[in-house]
Length: 164
Image (cartoon, rainbow, N blue to C red; front, side, top):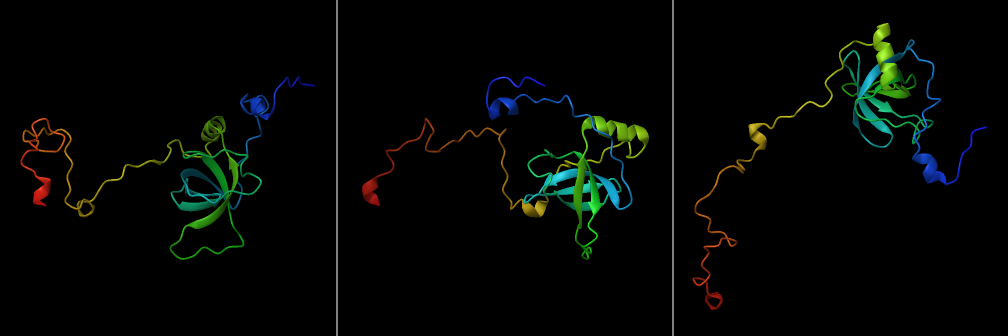
């Protein structure tokens, strides 16, 4: 039996014991597919892109909530919800079955289950000209005529409070 030592639950949390984390590799079956997590939505849901390029709304099962840590970019195995019919124009609802570690993802690539290239998840967004509202900020330009209230050359004797 393993000696647990002294300390409470915070000591056990901080240890990061990964001795027995080797598990059997789970391959997809009919009705299941591999996907990459793109965004955490909240309410035990997340957005993902399947290996085929389809957008999915993934529901984290109750047995995995607060036990399996899922972040953007993880490879997951999802299954279709047979009791729900997909709505027109909406993302398909699927359930999360397995989150793969980096080692397991490399093994799946070696077996040819997933493609060698990962999809781009964090794409840079560009601002359209219609969204700018005509306001331009330029931090590099130096202004010579700084008449602001914090200016060293500001003259306050032109302003009289009694004139108001």
